[in-house]
Length: 113
Length: 111
Image 1 (cartoon, rainbow over the protein chains, first blue to last red):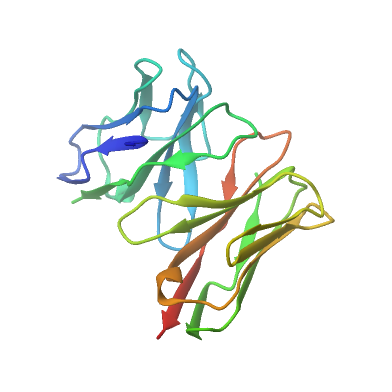
Image 2: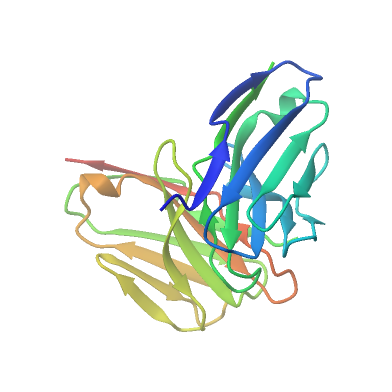
C-alpha cells in the first residue's frame, strides 16, 4: 500500500542549480497536487493537475514548473533554484479535485545554499 | 485569497487532558478537513466534514463544521503521548475549489 511516493526524500542544491522532484501515486486518482510547507505557514499550493493532461497554478507558482507525465506521475521542476525555495515539498492526490480529501506523500526536504 | 486562522499555535498538555483547537475563515467553506502530521511524514486525514452543523467522531477525536460555515473545531479527549504532532485544518469553498490550510497547531503531550 504505497499510496503517494516522492523521490528524493532529501536534497541539497546550490543557488542556480536545477532539480526535478518526482511523485507517483498508485491509487488511480485523477487529481494531483504539489505543496510547499514552511514553518508557521501551513501548506501552500504550488501547482495542481485536475486530471491527466491538465495543469494549473496554485497560490505560489513562481519559480516552478510541473509536468503531468501520465495518470500516475506528477513532477515539479525548479529551473534555477533560489534560497527562498528551501522548504519541504509535498505531493498529494485525490480521486477528483473536489470535494475529495487529499492523500499526501512523506515529503522532499530541499535545502538551497 | 482565502484566509484561515488556526488557534492555538501550540499546546503543552498532560496525558489524559482534553484538547480543543479551532479554525476560522474569512469566507464560507463547503468542506472542512482535519489532518495530523508527525515528524518526517506527510499529513494524514483524520476527519472530513461536508455539511454545516455536522459533528463527526473518529475514536477520541471529534470535529464540528460550524453553523456559520466559517469555522470548525477539533477536540481530542483523554490525550495520550502518541497524539503528539501538528494538527492542520483545511477548508475548501465552492468558488476556489482547492484546499486552503491553516498554520497548524503543535501538540505536545507530557506523560
